[in-house]
Amino acid sequence: MTLFGYKLPGMSSLLLWGLLWEIIGQTGYTFFVPPLSEVFATLFEIIGTPAFLKAMSETAYAFFAGVFFAITIGIPTGIMMGKNRLLDELLLPWVNIFLSAPLTALVPVLMVLFGFGMKSIIITTTLFAIWIIILNARAGVMQINRSLIEMGRSFGATPLDAFYKIYFWAALPEILGGVRIGIIRAVKGVIIGQLLISIVGFGALFELYSSNFLMSHFWAVLIVLFAMAFTISELLAYLERRVSYYAAKR
Image (cartoon, rainbow, N blue to C red; front, side, top):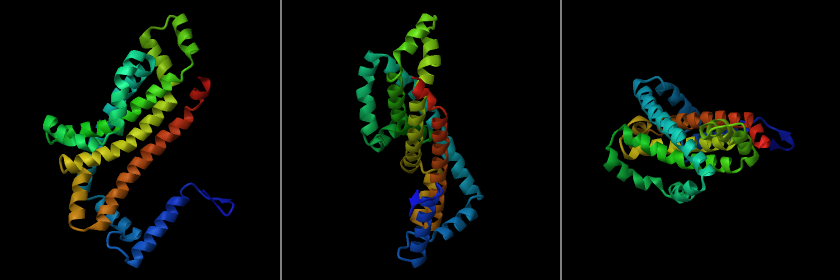
């Protein structure tokens, strides 16, 4: 960020938005936006309580389980679509449909099929994350230089060797990009699942605080959720930059 010709630190924009939030909250213009200082004070009050720790553990379990299934299913599927034209023509329309469709409409169907427990929440989280992972893995494979594949075959590489030693590593920049976006979508999926399927985790806290107009508590939990998603996203962005030389080698 640059201001009047001076380059400011990367977090300057967040500090400016935080200052604006504090000013609006102090004016008392709206009940729904308490001062940021009050939100952080509330966060430090509730962060060690048993209810908050229980909600965080439930949300983290559903989130990481959903992301795990999205990655372990999405990456191989995307790679196979990128290297097999028939499979790509069969699956690509459905992937595009589910990526663009409002997945919230599928939640009642998941509730009927899998019940009202944690299983449905994990499946919802997976469905929100998996489609962009598939498309990015597919795009990465389709940009691989064919000479790499021919070289692997000339040295006797089996299809399994080519899958793990050529396709995956050559498509890694796009795969990490898809995982990063998928994780951001998974945050939305896990909260929607906890609000619509079973009122547990952070979804239960959001429901409790909003119904009782405890807006500082509501924003405190939301900040924790955003901070978790932002941290994971930045970590993956760092890994993307570390492996970006693979794209040049292709």
